[in-house]
Structures are given as C-alpha cells and as structure tokens.
Amino acid sequence: MGRDEHKQNSSRNPLAQTPKAEKTDGIDVEFSNEFADAADLEALERGKKADKRAKRG
Image (cartoon, rainbow, N blue to C red; front, side, top):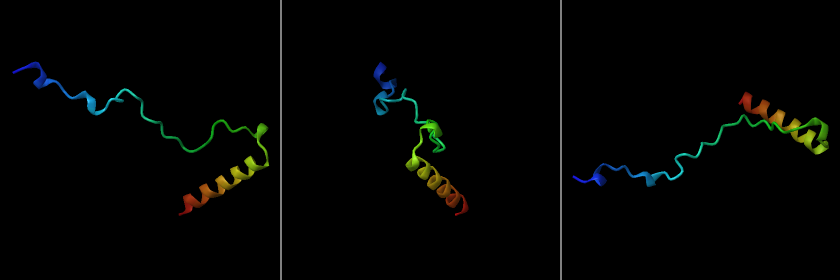
C-alpha cells in the first residue's frame, strides 16, 4: 500500500480558500442624497415602490 492511495484529490475545488460572496439586502450603502440628481431620486422612489409590491405578493 503506497502513500498515494490515501491522498485526497484536492484538484476538485482549486478555489477552496476563496471566500464566498456575501449576501446583501440590495441596499446601496454608497448612495448619498447630497450628490443625488433627479434621476437618482426617481430611481430611489421606483425602488421603494417595487419593494412594497414585492412584499405584498
């Protein structure tokens, strides 16, 4: 019995040490009302309305 018989195949997942992507709640934490223009504010309102619709249905 050789040493290779007990060796596990580590080539199946070469990125095993890469952290998994974090789940987010969809909120953009870098949004700033100070620098927002009309399109940003409109998109923010549309997003809020879409969230309300998604929670209802």
